[in-house]
Image 1 (cartoon, rainbow, N blue to C red):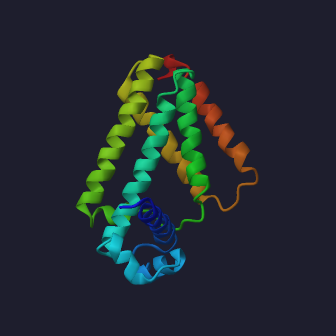
Image 2: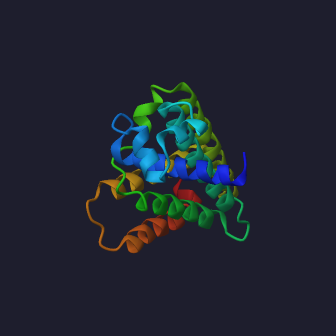
Image 3: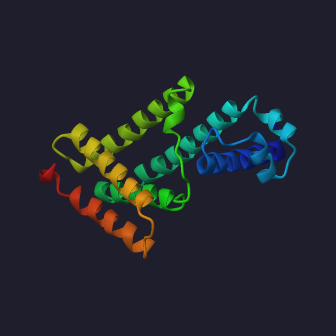
Length: 191
């Protein structure tokens, strides 16, 4: 594929993710995506064989982008381990803060799409391995439990962020939670 073709595919994937997230899988039509990108519906079939194929590709691309962000943070050797955990938390919350208008998430599609389910499981395994490496550097007592606790904290923070109708100061909201993570995981005897 040419660079121009790659750019078009990225535009399609970004639009598809946005529309699937706002309308849900069942309510999204390929023509919605085509209209958003400004192409004919038939153009989408040059890149994706079906709505399901487009959905899967959009989600997998998003997972890979998120994974690259986490990997970059995890490899920042100038940061202490608990600072990297705080940076991952901040990245996670900023990601979801930017997507608060999304009404539906992808979990309902996993049971219908084995490939997507496997991709998500692989992503989560790699994500947790990165967190475990940081926990080992922080010398926490039980790395696996500390990792699960961290993941639970991220899930809780995300759910709180997505459920609240209005957050007056988003930056402050996120920083309070990031500071909690920074201080909590810097005290290995607590875990």
